Image (cartoon, rainbow, N blue to C red; front, side):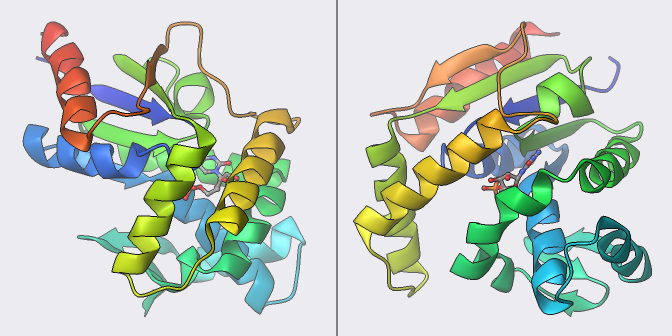
Length: 216
Ligand code: C5P
């Protein structure tokens, strides 16, 4: 059969990357975390003290974003942890709303997708990056539950956090991402919307993998 493309979109902390990683492993296909790419651009913006898209893109051309197993690199620097910091998280929506930044990322994402089977997670995968994807899933969940998941994740990673702050941060970021001019967060017309509130990771994975089986 031809290569398959699976798009997983949805708001912050809806479980996209967790389930996408598992599915990629189960189906033996490539996984691409597009959020990590926008986070990397944001880290460059903060460290280089510029919001100029040309400067950020030039930096990333000299020091390309790459993925190795579960790690993210800018050039040869491992940024896996630092791109999850609060400072990056609270600035990422602004940087990812810049049209030139999006254009650069989308072309990188399509290049990576190339001719391999892939599962990609993000905000605009079904609508913009892979409009012909075979399967388009849009994951949603109550903001309280999403904040709870992040809270638990943070504890596991040894990061202090406050539930109220997380709810606020997630809601603010969703609003920004959904209302921006270019490629706002929204399902495609042919996306399957799946509410993961109260669902386990296994249940979400099973739902998507069953849909993937139906493709054959
Ligand atoms: O998925 P994650 O929460 O890591 O994404 C971080 C941010 O990157 C999002 O809040 C959004 O602003 C941006 N993003 C985007 N388009 C994507 C993936 C992420 O604009 N495809």
